[in-house]
Image (cartoon, rainbow, N blue to C red):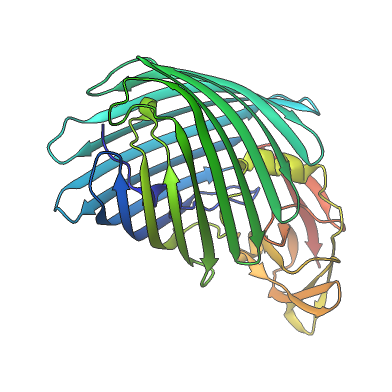
Length: 380
């Protein structure tokens, strides 16, 4: 089994894309102190390039990484994942997903997995849940067919998202049950995430890499230094995942992430982009109205958002190349920015307190080909 660098779990946070979707590419560099199950504590340096594409219905991501340990040994990894949220029910959706990965540690044989699954999502206005199952192949020193069955519930508010889940897994001679919960708080340019879990029941041989009963948890903070540069710090522990060939570990890490291309947004919501956008779609006009007027110069337009009880408002559109622009609060509940916009029809979205991108009131809402929405304004 190949060790998985903790930095990939706690340092790498991929940007979610606005509803007018485009790819986002980033590069993360991290330093970690880590102790894998069955190994001595070691320092490590991790380099992780990644590309992600998210819409309300489709999510695709690929990442590679190279980890160099104090011993001089290294781990090279590559992962690919995709998901499709389909269906048109007001309170339900189906999601089909797949993932594949391969890793090689030092002179050990390569390890890998290829998994596919489905989930039935149930939606309320601010809460919901899912029932899911997945299976596939795990390849390497211990090959087999893993089977996972899961159930989860979630709740999303403006700043806070909470998820709780239960997962039962069977793989080879291992049988185990995981209970986990996570909470993410998102502010303007900052996000803090806490995860707690327990594996109360297992049936395994008890060898390194097998499922072991016990508890785990971690705490991670992300801070945007500029619009394209962010830092993260985190620490804690995570359990083994025999199906994906991941060792349990305790870690502490510090990482830096640069967005190389694509739209800039805050760290991923705790729930998937499809869920976040589905929740936002039912509240697109709630609490925020856009007004557009002249700003003196013939090329400038004043974008004013009326939104109470918020700490940050961002704007992006085709006229900003879908790059987020922070608005300035000029009085309680009134946010403004002067932006050069050519005459014509334009598409845009706003974001309140680092939440999902939505079409504000005061615009004509247009559904995109990916199932999301944008606000339409005409500049004269």
